[in-house]
Amino acid sequence: MIKGIFSFAAPVLHAMPPEVAHEMTLRALEMGAYPRCDGASEQSLKVKLWELDFPNPVGIAAGFDKDARVPDAVLGMGCGFAEIGTVTPLAQSGNPKPRLFRLTADRAVINRLGFNNAGHAAALGRLAKRPRQGIVGVNIGANKEAADRAGDYVQGLKAFAEVASYFTVNISSPNTPGLRDLQAPAQLDELLSRVMAARAEIVAAGKPHRPIVVKIAPDIAEEDVESICARLAAHRVDGIAVSNTTLSRPELEDSRAKEGGGLSGRPLFHRSTVMLARVHQATGGKIPLIGIGGIDSGATALAKFEAGASLVQLYSALVYDGPALIGQINRHLADTLRFRGLSKVTELTGTRAKEWAARPLA
Image 1: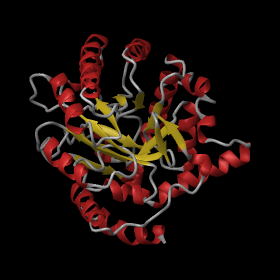
Image 2: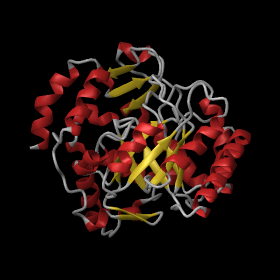
Image 3: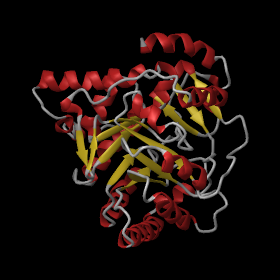
Image 4: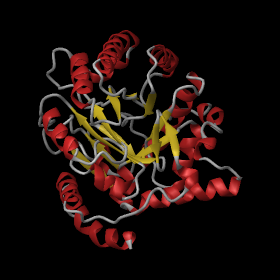
């Protein structure tokens, strides 16, 4: 049924410019026009992490629902959690259009959107009205023209403290000039010192303690992985999301591969999974990881767990496969657990990290 609906809609959506198709998808979800799927049916897929109970470990990555328009629809389609954003304190229009490209032959997407969003107030207004059911993370970023970018992240924590299930600190988008510089150890120290101090103030004021995840790039220099992970561990972040889009360009078929921006989808899978495994090793498996990048099947999702993930997120593959992919991944994971005689999906975490970490990035 789900696959049939998407098979009908996909040609229509793919005939539209990508941003128009995305807006039409969001409007359909807002109206309730989406396939329902119970993502909590398999006991083996439940994950207890950060005192949160994930009904399954598959979520949609930030970028899909920038302004918190459809988190409950995402959950209703079978995701174990949703993540909205990236959201910045002030509304901003992002980079000039065109800025989003389908690379159909490569099952990939290039975007140079630039944190286009309606700002904190708009997203907060929607999240405050929704029923407090399901896990909804808030991905926070900095405005392009911000004089104090660390201050923008602090504002994000304070604004969404009561409505976010967790926070993702996005310092890895390639589409805001200078943002990735925040991954350098000295700047990372300053940022996380302020972020963690702000969370302590929030908790001291009687508001909830929310987990903080830091999202990193797949393009970090190999020699910097250990030092960056050491800083993340020193500041006791609750999780690391690996990874954002890449500026690298593996061999691609589509002529639009030359467009500037971050590449996601199938060509990102190898690089992001190797980086995931290296982060798992660099942190000694002591910090939970969210595996992102190129997941388009049960097998690729399984590989993320084996490389070190405790949760996974996808987005680009939905452009090509539709929402049925969510259930397919969960079923594949559950079947794999039964076949291997395992009772929990987290028993897969890191089982092949050493092997993946030894592979070249490119």
